[in-house]
Length: 206
Image (cartoon, rainbow, N blue to C red; front, top):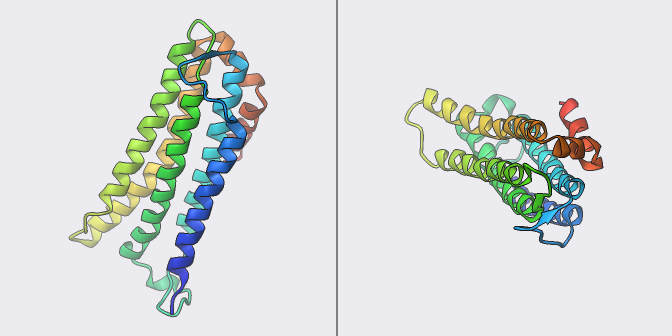
C-alpha cells in the first residue's frame, strides 16, 4: 500500500499551519491596515512577512523539482515519471503556494502604510504585487485541472505551472526595489530593517 499520498497531505497541512504561526509571530497580532505607521516599522513588517513567504516558496520549488516518482509499493522509480505524475506533484505544490501567498496578502495589508511622502503608493504597490501573485498561482493551479490531449501539451502545462512559482519570486524582488527607489525614506528603512537585511541575504543566496 502506498501511504505517500496521505502522508504528503498531512505534511502539507502541517506546513500551512506552521507558516501561519510563523507569520503571526513576525507581524504580531496588530492590524495596522488603513493606518499610517513609522517607515521602519512598516519595513520590518513587510520584509518579515515577505521573507517567511519566500522561504516557503523556495521550499515548495525544491520539493517539486526533486520529488521522485513512486510505484504502487512506494518504491522510487525515477524512470517511470511522466508529465501526469509530475503534474500531481506540482498541483500539490501550487496548493501550498496559494495558501502561503494568501497569508502573505494578509500580512502585507496588516502592515499599514509608511508615514512618508510616497508611503501610501508604496504600500499599495506591495499589496498589489501580493494580490496579483496569489491570482497568478490560482490560475496556474486551475490550468492543471484540464487534461492534456497530447504529451507536448502535458509538458507545457507542467512547465508553465512550475514557472508561475518562480515568477512570483522574481516579481517580488523587482517590486521591493522599485518601492525603495520611489521614496528615499522608504529606501532607507528597507536598507536598515533587520528583516529586510535577512530577505536580501536570501535573495543573494539563490
